[in-house]
Image (cartoon, rainbow, N blue to C red; front, top):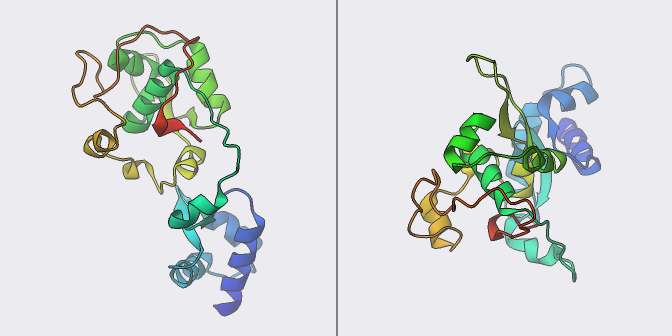
Length: 201
């Protein structure tokens, strides 16, 4: 197992993107048990400057959360999203898998193709399975890239409404008909390049 830990460790440090157990098994000798090696490594890296983190169904080495300030650059580039994109992303994250029609029902306004395209291009959102309803509409779900960006193991780790309000990211009084507390029923205005602290780099 010691040799297998070293193999997994080497692969994780050399791989830019999170890697699954199946992918690890495909690189390791026949009969190796990467899942067990990962369990040993995760325990060994607890409390270290680098931790072994689960990202969806994959694994990656990440800087310990309390040391993130050491990795900040002098110039911080922020990714700007329109309010429409922020609302759409939040709805997908909290309601996935969700169709375009369901997103529009929650927001109360139509969702332009440009909004969804932007989220797809950022690789924070991907197509999910088609719903078994008339027309078989496609659904949208968040990606492992989205989870990795915000340091989440899975979508269930998203902060609750109380946490968001406590952090000042949501208004205390939900607007009527919004479907999500703190989200305004603004018209679909893609030129509005507002930012949200929740979705900054």
